[in-house]
Image 1 (cartoon, one colour):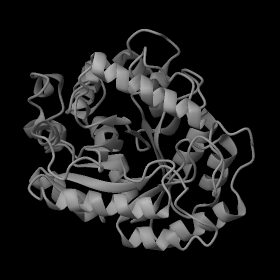
Image 2 (cartoon, helix red, strand yellow):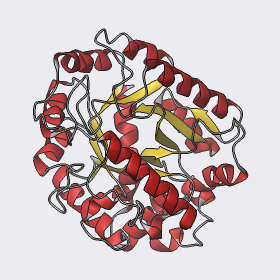
Image 3 (cartoon, one colour):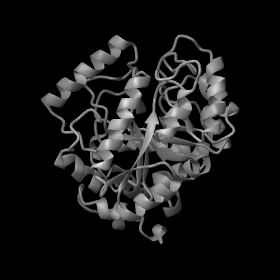
Image 4 (spheres, helix red, strand yellow):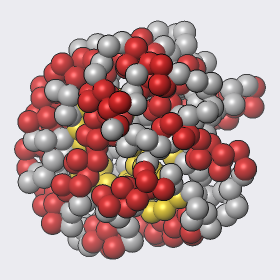
Length: 356
């Protein structure tokens, strides 16, 4: 039984030996990226090795990026599917919960096509059905700023869903697309949860009760989400605290355990907002990070706390099999096997199966 496997001793091991062990768990990362769809078709050996070692059953992978229009979004989905098709032994596109089951059993990584923004839509909303037909299964209502559906957490406008957003919620429900309110402001989050006929997720967030940040959510939002049957995925980002030093697993667990207390054990997951491949920190990475932060600030989409001086990852979890390590640490902190399995993947799986 799965529950017999999750003990501190069972999960002990070297940082990179977790693939076989982690495959015993249903492991779903609510937000991650396996590779850049604009890279070469043939993935680097290090990327393929990281995917194999991760032990992940599935990830919600942002495919079109914030700022991409309809054409670019279609092109990126096409490229993603092409790249995945070149590596059928380790990856597959996820369209149903059964696909996730197949990935867990066979050791493949399931790629769930997800959106974080709404620039690819127009007022007709016809693209919702088009993207669903192309395989998209998770869509957000907004990014950090204002959008066609609603307002993000950094928007100066505190209002919620637009008229298009109200219709979008209905259409997303009809198309069986999982709605995500990550990055949304309070009004957009509350109205989306209330209007949706299906459970909603906040795929990557933190708890404002632990550290207040625009990208995180208040207890009232988390309770409303749980009451609707949804799941909040806790991220591994600098937004977990306001410090300047390295991020720690202790701060991560303060958020996880607070969310468990507020939402209940059936409504918390992990949405790491990290790449599957380990980050090779150093001068080259810091230079690229500095350029990215500068670009995001210029575009007005940079959240407080984004900095090249404080890399956006927890060093102790800068590894491909980070969900396995989180499971091990949860066991060491006294969490039951059942709770660990839910947080590592079963909760996201339950919602995905219901909605899809």
